[in-house]
Image 1 (cartoon, one colour):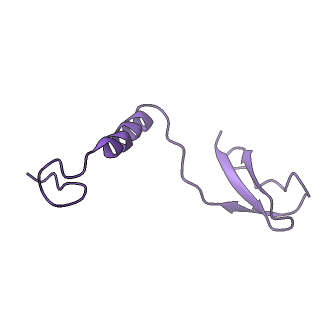
Image 2 (tube, helix red, strand yellow; image 1 turned 60 degrees about the vertical axis):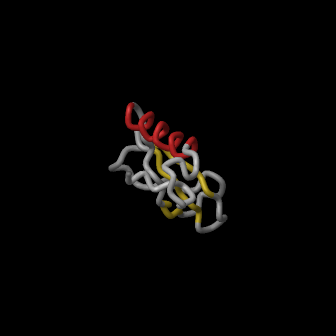
Length: 78
């Protein structure tokens, strides 16, 4: 089931709700007011998430200037 993020227009509370894609937005659990859906990045699971984590770690581990050029992070074009 997808996770959705909402913001209550009455009490300014943010919360998450789990429901089907065809279901309507819930009311605020704190005050019962109407809500607006917030945009958020989709969750990535499985092998794609591991690949992204590995790519991000490789950028962190990179030493500046290892290719010999004067660019701070190295150009990696040679």
